[in-house]
Amino acid sequence: MNLRRRQEVVKVEKAIIGGTGVYEIGKSSQQKIKTEYGSVIVDIVKTSNGTEIAFLARHGKGHSTPPHLINYRANMKALKNLGVKYIYATGAVGSCNENFAPGDVVILKDFMDFTKTRPLTFYEGSETGVAHVAMDAPYCRNLREKFLNSAQKTGLEIKGDAVYVCTEGPRFETASEIKMYKMLGADVVGMTNVPEVVLAKELGMCYQTLGIITNWCTGIKGAVIDHDITDIVEKNKQLITETFMLALTGE
Ligand code: HPA
Image 1 (cartoon, rainbow, N blue to C red):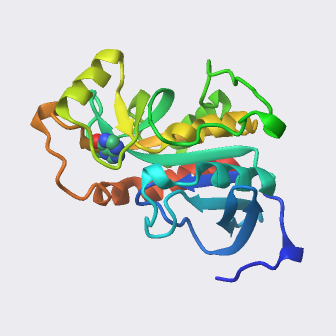
Image 2 (tube, protein in one colour):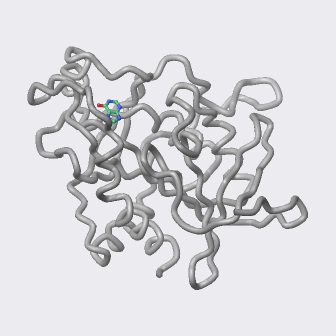
């Protein structure tokens, strides 16, 4: 693995963000990208037809950063600086919808934000200005269609569309919290899609997340989450990555 020197900086239009359990997608070189929020290292993976794809491990390699401390602004700005326009992401989620079981894969269609302490925007007044980005379609419909078509070819089963609740973490939810989210219309619960999806929108990048269901949420079917949730990601990570590649590069 070599770190590309500054004069070799490439422009890459397509990216994959790997969530819990997805820390690399193939043989790659690495690039360090500076932003006003901090530096970020991304992998640059070359496909067999020569297309370069950026890969970013959201939690860092080997899951070193917890969800509430991820530098989401640095991550998203780094991809923007690299020239990225299209992003697929994975996110480990718990399910509070009986139709979506552990091991299933869902495509996110909307979100509810229950985070508490994270920087949420690039627009903080002064030089950065004030802006209110539209959230009628937080996830990219185009990327969604491309992914569904590709999934038919790779054989990846998508269980359905899901409304995602983002909690602050790093603790799991109480049974009463899950009961409330379910009553509000949530299907799945995770800790990382906000503000990532919002920042992508603010930067004008098309963004779509696939939820990998790792567990029943607390209290659903009597669930207590006291096991490692990463194991279950292993099961479909390869097929999801292949499907992302097909959707992004046509191969
Ligand atoms: N809750 C919040 N985040 C999660 C869960 C959950 O049950 N499973 C995986 N990420």
